[in-house]
Image 1: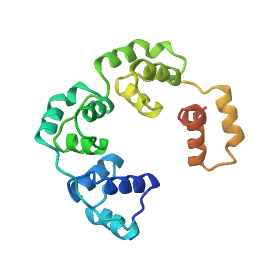
Image 2: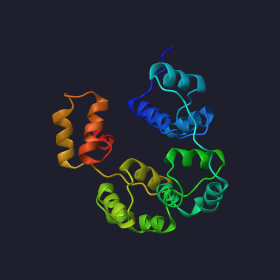
Image 3: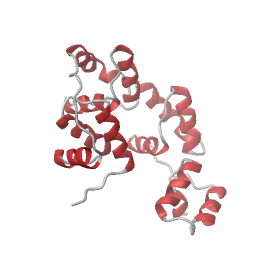
Image 4: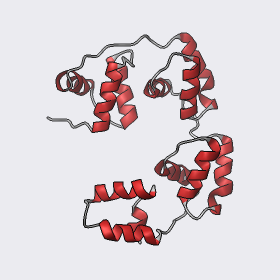
Length: 204
């Protein structure tokens, strides 16, 4: 059976094998499945790496007790992006997926947004005409790089959900291009141009 891997997954496999990011094949596979929300087996990934890509697994030194202690004591203080940045200021650089795997395997779940950020979102949610404008200001204010999709999902989890009607330009663009692309390409290109989910236009 031919198990498919996306271009992004193949790039991840290559980078992490060549960089010897993980301590074991098992840890490597766990990190892959966590990163891509997959359920690939060890044999499947070993076959892909060894046979199809012509690479060989190797391992990197284990996390030190000092590194583990720092993570255990500090994971609640940061968002994941800030956590990785701070960690790599203090210790030899590790790929984010290594840190994510350690946190996941040890049931250490951090806040994705800090209290100050949550408060800002609640206070400003109804002050913007579009989520894109709100997210732009949010990212500037807190030096973040959140995407529109993850930001909208987080707002919904907070109970903040509002329908933003599409603009005339967005509607016109879809009408002009709907026959040129299949749905996936149309959605992708629309998102690249307007940084917005195309579903709001299709509902209209």
